[in-house]
Length: 406
Ligand code: F3S
Image 1 (tube, helix red, strand yellow):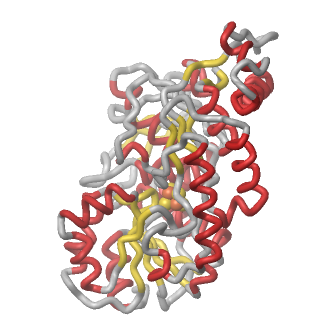
Image 2 (spheres, helix red, strand yellow; image 1 turned 120 degrees about the vertical axis):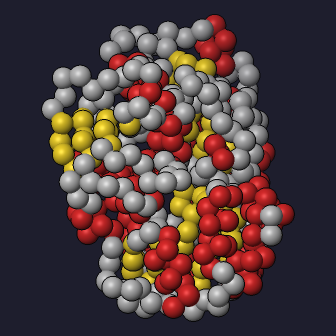
Image 3 (cartoon, protein in one colour; image 1 turned 135 degrees about the vertical axis):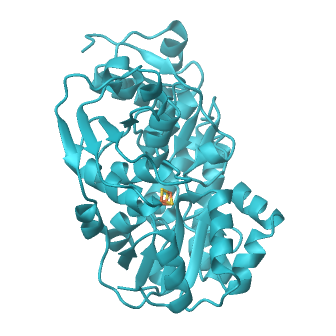
């Protein structure tokens, strides 16, 4: 652990207030955290991704905190993006959101905009133009995006908190600690996954099992049967980060630092995973009737939206369907004719939000089916919903029949 934190002249000047009280406050937060982590110095970051956007979670105190910081003149000095908000900011009325909630939510997004943060409202910035490069230092907060950036892309970020990511955006720096350092990126637990992985739900169940076993650390996976066809690794990392405090994992031969031998699992005793049953047991509940089906956690890609449109084949839906995604992806899906195909069946492609951060209890839903392990893990406690969990085909079937096939 470093005994003293080394600051550049510019950092010291900002800390002394030379660039105004808003910048000073940001630097003070970054410096305080760097001291807590025992960092030797600060590291410049290329982008920030900020959580704590939904008014449902922030409340009035959080909104006023942002407004006060904005009034102090603080502005982001690097590209900074926002996590999902508590509602679709365009289609909120049709979806049943209260206008009073929307007014507060708009005030939150406006405060962030004044702070210089782009109102992207997505947990998958890497799907919409912020694609970090190998070795780039970041200050990202959304846990699923953090695992994706570190593991799949080989960028470097800790799991920042919402205020610390905002402070890093304004200061342009974060503590050089944790996953910014080579030594913290080495595997701490080795898993031989011997069972087949057939779907995105299987990947999610695996992620939940590994996250809850490792808790804090860096899992290294050897997959005997490889990945499911067309697999998107965002679902695996999102699940690990939900059940454990995982910010980085490696898959031998596949992920950024485990492809070229940058990291190796030498000296670790392997644990075998022969079945995903315990993961499904944690995630899948007992509801028979389904009110709502949610696909798109993390936010859906254009390819996933196309899969859903194809799977629906114009059939009428008994349960509501929300496909949650980023606004630019939705716009692309409109242009590709996918949104109209999903809407013809009665489904919705919802932008800017998701069911975990939206006030869904007020919308009257009681039961949910999803193919997302992260959503299934959080929805019972965050939204009070009874959850069924399974692959996309089962979820599509549930939205058509209104029932979960046992
Ligand atoms: Fe994203 Fe919401 Fe899931 S923020 S990762 S869609 S819980």
